[in-house]
Image (tube, rainbow, N blue to C red; front, side):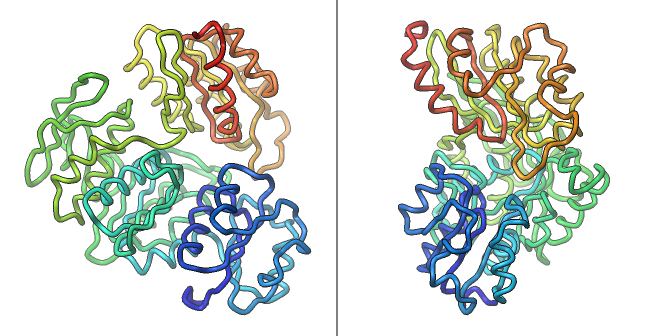
Length: 453
């Protein structure tokens, strides 16, 4: 089916961050949009306000009547929805066109000058920075983001369709549906071993992604990765390199050396060396297609951030509350180091919700080492997402490996009371599960707690 022939789009898993971006695209294109998800969330409520019809029960009887006709209806699904969902049997038996989210994203971006960001860490922040840079440079950009940009207040941007910014997700080899003009690989740490089986197989998939860059296109890679391309890094021999790095008034200030010139006194406000690298990756990609690179430099200084990516929720003399999506040991290390750099000497209470039984099993010792670095560490139960439990793999199992005397498991329902009683100097909530839905309630409670007034 050609997308031009699509009149209606039904999403199985419409509330996912990637799926909701596609839903917004089709709504903007004037198509009818409906879908299923398990529970209402701020994203699904926003989609309903924008015109989508959403049901929260796994019943085919609730599929709106127009979407029960195969002609002109496209069905999009995410691997997060189990194949046992009755919608799959209904749509497949009815002769509908049923495609993965990644396939549809590939079809949309193929008609644009696509800039795709891949990597086991940093995709979302880099993509959001890149979309911001292109927009501020006055370019026609369409962006599908894996997080809510604080600059746009959305995970979707449509200022035109000449350029597209997309996340090239390695999960389920989704990024192999893309054909970018400019591609970037930020990192290649072992992850998603439930899909790949080994780090070597993951590395091979990234190589295949690099091979999908269009003829005449460009591949941007962090210096040190085993791929050939335009390199970027901090204080090394990269082609695009941050030099003379310093902090001024809570911001980073630095120079960017490129093959053509050096940009002096560039400013960037997101804490952490990992975020500096994300900003440099986005700049390196943008400068390959932008006619006015000086505007890109100015835009780096105005980037606000991404929700749940080192997001300051409270910042007072008595309490700092930071929320982050980190769900891999390398990401947790990066957040820890950013806090220590920006807030030296202050005690950190980290509340972590492990994401996936398989990831917890595969990286148990690494998680334990990363989490042990905090002054206090609390674990919530593992968020299963798409998985069934694995025997013996629990938060108690992970807790037993953490070498920190101030560790404990906490029930999510008791979390706010426990945090208030603990009175931390710095509170950090981390994880990719539904811990993110607790953040505003935690912020609210702490904002009104006497001990923080």
